[in-house]
Image (tube, rainbow, N blue to C red; front, side):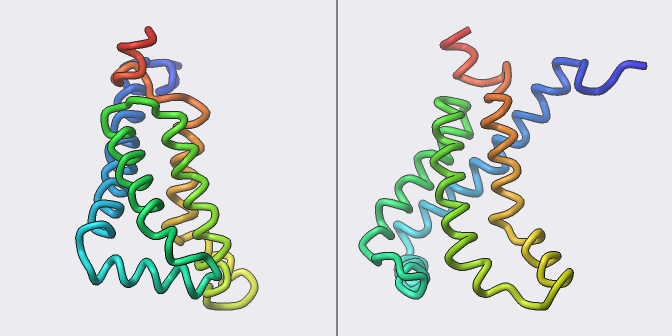
Length: 142
């Protein structure tokens, strides 16, 4: 029996789709935090309430946008995924975890369902595997 992971084109397709979804999500999120005053204000409030200086809103948004765009094209995918994982883990620890609803297993369910948890898992896959053959990383490095 042939496992799906033994079909290189399928593996590369899955990595491409993962990069596109995660990269686009972060790129758009960062872009709108930089260009939409209400999103910028919300980001600053979230950072302040988590004990993080509001002055980091702009640099974090730039990192989200650029690293997300980098994932989209598959350029510097692992460093980009690492940067985004750092942002996601900090967001999880400072915002998601303290604000999680429920108790016991229900709280765990809500934490596992949080976007930061799912994005972190996806980013870990990209860190572990790289961008795949259908990426600029592969085209440049070989």
